Image 1: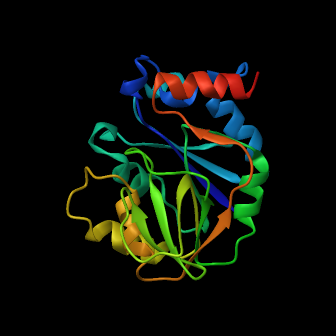
Image 2: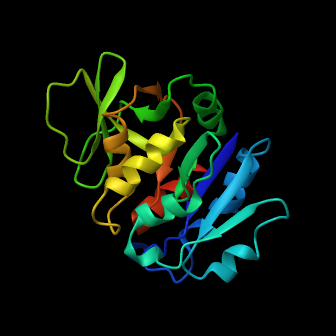
Image 3: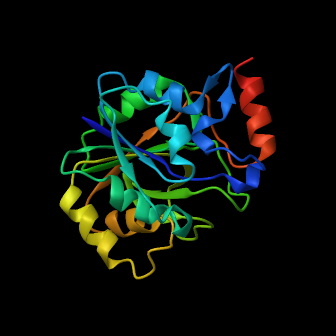
Length: 217
């Protein structure tokens, strides 16, 4: 199975001049934590901001794709990183229990998300709207008649790659977030989810990084 790690971003809101994937938590970079969790996967890493720094940390055997337009948005990174293999699309700015990734890899749906039902929307979180056992909407500030609304961890298993390519091409603004393509995808193919019951954290702000460091202390 292929893992596509989206690691092109800068992380301006963190006030750091390094790629987000090179932030250290518990004595390891986020990139190293991902690579350890992804043993047994074929790995593609999409780089952009200060790509030379990231390349220094990548072992042999990891495929590298370069998104030179990384500042325009993550949709371009997703399009850059896709191959024809089914696999897991992963944000690089997340710390997590690797068991969550293993559970997601076993999901049978054409599209499957890691969904944390404990999260609440405060303005930043990317949420999933569920009815029955199907994810019907992906976005921020969801409204609608859902049985469950929870946060996506930022990892999505996709086996219907042609459909994903199709919806990426439909997005008029290439500078948008890649979740817009996923939102279109779940309206075309059945999308399931795996509930999250273990620690994880997306790192966007300095306070997130501080909490992640404390989590691994």
